[in-house]
Length: 284
Image (cartoon, rainbow, N blue to C red):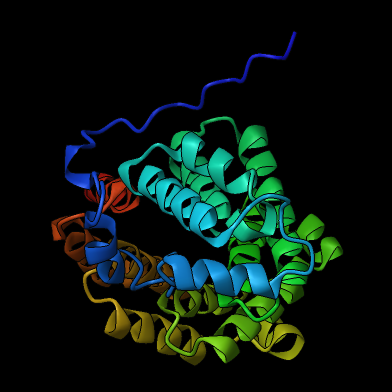
């Protein structure tokens, strides 16, 4: 008898506003993916992906791939994160982008157990690294790895993170992402936080000499993300986080203003709803 799958904690908010059934997904895609520049998975895109991989899944044609990817993204945007992850994972590297994003966002907001959260980020990194090998020209193959390893590093000790060389891996993946997609707002956000977190952890001198971390670069990349996606709650949240990392108590008022802005934005999908609710919690 097959083992019963463990149900993930559900999205705790009303999903009605985030239902992108039918052609609604295509029409909203540009706004939904302004941050990660994920191409819409239509038939042409599916053909492109199948042509790019050396070993596509047997019996999977472009029409079926497009349909399955669209359904996976619909599940993701409405908050059915487990369904989105499983649908993406079943497609291997072709579905890694949606799988990594689904498991990552769910882990951040809806998994309380720290050990389980780290396992989720490890799984996302594993999927992303397979995608990097299969689809090296796809910006999100590299970005999802940076996202997963960056979140994983936040949950372990500095000593372990240094031993694993995570900072270098994250920086390499983000640099590659931005070389392939200079307007990738989420990569700019992540790279800005990379600079800020290293300075906060090891100081500006060691951070600068060892990792090339600079406060000016942190602010530059976060401001770029805000320019590219002014209606993205996470861009404002992370800008506030950057201010606290670099300036401590002196940055509290400006950080609070950033969280206030994030909390006032209308969420376009389940992830943004979770972002907005988090921003509100920071103001309480």
